Image 1 (cartoon, rainbow, N blue to C red):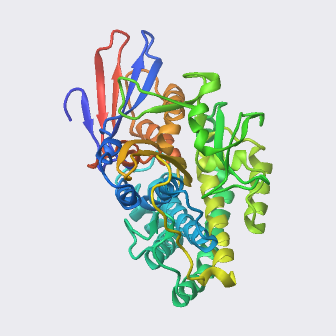
Image 2: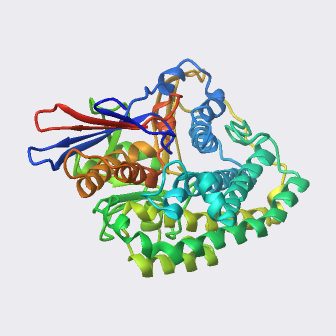
Image 3: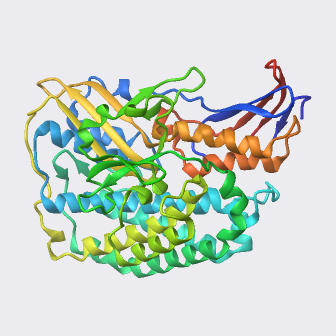
Length: 474
């Protein structure tokens, strides 16, 4: 430990490079704080000059955690450029793959990254506060987490050919139909996955009251919420229209064709981060702060659409209110979504036409522009491409879920820091809580900035003149 630096192992439990700076005033109170994403974003430029049919597989390489989400959104943008209607079975198989992606990613976020805080305590020994510590204290919870993630990954592998970076989703649909043996193998595993999902949800509900203080200070503020919904109001994960509501439920925008996203969403950059910040244009920047992802999806939807998930949603709203505003409740929403996704996968794969061999439409370039939108685990994901008449990509814009949440993450860090930091003394539990509020959003910084590396987190504490008092890093 140097005079102004504390090094804490292991690296923080977020995906990607980031640091936090906290500015103190003359009285030692927190005046400002920022969440800095220090990776460089490059995939938008890398894609230029590639053929449009390559884009889904190329876009899957953006991330090793949620490659399916990028592949699905990319393929939908390509569908529009080709001017094709994807066969119904192709649409359903894409949905299954995307839902499996959400299950495995939510399991990773909740069990691997956040459950050590929830189970062992935010102030517990950092050497024990990890998945191994969870397995030692509550083996069943750890096993459920591993099993649920494996369930989602196996579906991706069976449909897409491999668990990471599959190439099965293509412009016009999917590259091959589902085999009966693959369907039967997935259906056989659903009862076990459903049992584990419900068991974890019951554990969380039993213990949720013990995290009341964290829920009150982990990003609890009014904002807008955005997500995809079907015309009837059900949550939509692969298709649907954009809906934006405020913290009181007032509908700010509804039935918005995702292809018109630029009319509602603006993007800006700040000198202290490589991550773009998006905002709701009618309210301007930075007043147009909004959130996406599990918490937002449950807020904008009338219902989820399956009986078990809707029963859990009703209890969730009875406990927390119709429009919960604390980002801590992303955890609760994630678990409900796992239940819902498993049930929808079961429904889709039980259809008699799911083995229909007609799963892809083929065409040449019919448009020079296409927008593909889907719900990634972390929220709305937008791929926007422009191509020439030969299908050569000329321009790409990727609006990533973590970018949608950037303003909210910064406000959450400031709120948490103001509550827990007093003066220039930094305790490990404070640092962990600042990390934990970021984990609520489950940010994927490689998705949003397209770089790879280790995962340090740094907190700089400065006095009113800007002089560095202490640096805490992981």
